[in-house]
Amino acid sequence: MGVGSLGLARLLDRHSLDHLLLAQSKISPTASAPPKASSLQKANAPQQKSVSQPLSPTTAISPEDDQLLDEIEKQNFQFFWEQASPQSGLVRDRANISGNETSVAASIAATGFGLTALCIADQRGYISRNDARDRVLATLRFLWKKMPTHRGFFYHFADINTGERVWDSEVSSVDTSILLCGILTCRRHFEEHSEVSMLAYEIFNRVDWTWLSEDTSLLPHGWTPEGGFLPYRWDYYSEMMMIYLLGLGSFTHPLPADVWNAWKRLRFEFDGIRYIGSFAPLFVHQYSQAWFDFRNKRDAYANYFKNSIFATQAHRQFCLELGKQFPDYSDDLWGISASDSQEGYIVWGGPPELGPIDGTVVPSAPAGSLPFLPQPVMRVLHNLRDHYGKAWSRYGFVNAFNPLRNWYDVDVIGIDTGITMLMAENARSGFVWETFMKNPEAQRGMDRAGFKKEQA
Image (cartoon, helix red, strand yellow):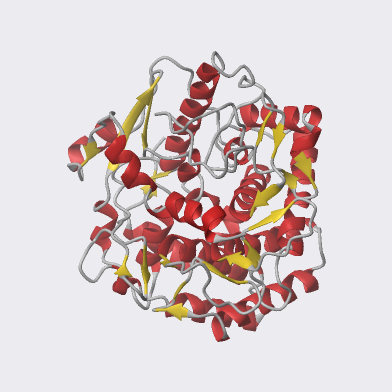
C-alpha cells in the first residue's frame, strides 16, 4: 500500500480539503466576525425553521440499542488490539477485515483513538485492566523515548515497528492533537499508575504550541523538514477545535487566548436548518466532540453540541433528498463522509454536495453522530446489522459499501472505526467525555476560549 493509494488521499483530506472546496464552491456563506456582546445570543445561535427541534442529548438508549452498541464496540476494539504493535503501541492506519494485514504504515491519529479504546475496553471488561494498562504503558514509553518528534509534534504516518516517518508525511497539528486526546484520556483513567501519569504529563508538556503561532493566530496544518510550514491554515470551523483548545490549555507553551476568535465560523442553511459548518464531510462535526464535552456550554458564538445536532440533521435530510437519485438512501440507510469507494478514496458528503456521490454508504458517518441524533442513527445501525451482512466484519462495519453496485469494502480505517467506538460509548455512558474532561488542560482550554454554562 503506497502513498499513491492512501497517503496522498488522506493528506488531501486533512490538509487542503477546506481550502480547495471553499475556492471551488459557488456557495458563499458569510463568515462570522467576533460579535459584539450585545448581539451574541441572537446573531450566532444556530436555528431551525421548518423541521422539529433537535432530539434531547440525554435520549435514553434502549436495552436492544445498548446490546447492539456493545457488539459494535467489542468488534471495533478488536481492530485497535490486533492492528497495533504490542511493542510500540502504534496503530495501523487501516487494515483488511480478514485481520491479515502486512502494511507497516501506522497513523498517530488512529493511535490516539486506540489509546482511548483501551480505556473503554477496560471500563467495559473487554480485556483485563492489567492488559489494557500494559499496552498503554508500552505506547507511552515508545512515544516518549523513541518516536521522532519536532517541537513535540508527531509525524502523521510512521512505521508501526520503528516509529520512523513514512510517505514523507508532515508533522501534523491535528493528528498530534488526536493522539494527545487519547494520551490525556489514559492519564485520567489510569491515574493510580504513576508512570502513566508521568509519561502523559511529559509528552503533553513537550508540545510547543507557541511554535505554531509564532507569526499567526491561524495555526498551520503541519510542517515538513523539506519545506517548512504547510501553506494551509486552520482558518475555518472544522475538526480543528481540539487543536486550539489543547493549545489554550497548555501550562508550559500556551497559545494566546485571542486565537480562539481568529478562525471563521461560516453559516450554512439547508432545508430550513441553520448551522455553523464548512465545505467538508460530516466528520468535521464529530472529531473534537469525541473528547471535549460541549454539552450545555457555549462560547461567544455557539453551543457546538447543538450545532452538531443541526449539522447532522441537515446531512440526514440531504441524504434523504439524494434518495430520489440513489434509492438506497432512506430513513433506514443514510450517511456519507470521506471514505473508501469502488473508485478509491473519495472526500464526499454534504450539504453542499461533495462528490461525485454514487450511492455509497459510510457507516461511520451516522455512527459518529450517535450522541447528536441517537434514535435516527440507531435506526440505521440496526438496519445495517440486520440486513447487510457483507458490511459487517471482525472489526465492526466495513469502511464503506454501495448496495446499488453490490460493492463492499474489504478494509476498515482506524480513525473511522475510532470515531464509531468513542461516540457509541459517549452515547451510552458519556465515559470518554467524563474521563477526558477531568484533565486540567481540557478545562483550562475551554475556560480560556470563553466557554460558559449555557443558561436554560
